[in-house]
Image (cartoon, rainbow, N blue to C red; front, side):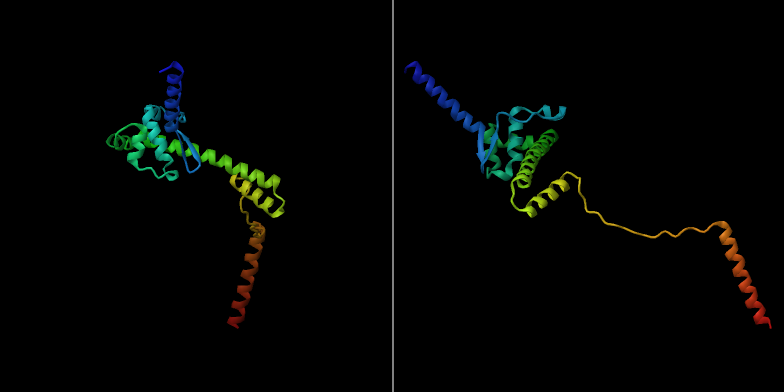
Length: 179
């Protein structure tokens, strides 16, 4: 075998391995080699294979791979996989990955809203997109106008005057009854 043929065979095998490391699931590319860095010291303790399994678990809604297939793709046994997924730091890393995916998705949402606002010909669509954007960013919320009339509180002098008037009225009533 010539040196060039051997080199081509090596490159072909590297491409095959790369295909296993970057899989496309329903139009979504998942890179099993370049994983997001864990955030906490606890999740940093996970091995690369454990993090790959976490990524497959976090993206489970996008593929129909069984747990056994996920473990095979990562290169671990199913039994080892079940032990891994029970670990607290594994579950924390899955949560980190889901948060990361959510941030990426929100970027797509904001880009779509921006396109609607800038490129739409319909004023209604533009206004609806602005309303959604402002609501998502917390700058717009439903408001209600509440009005209530607060009566002026009477002063102590006014109260005393009213009490005296009421006493006079009572005395007049008592005087009329005794006659």
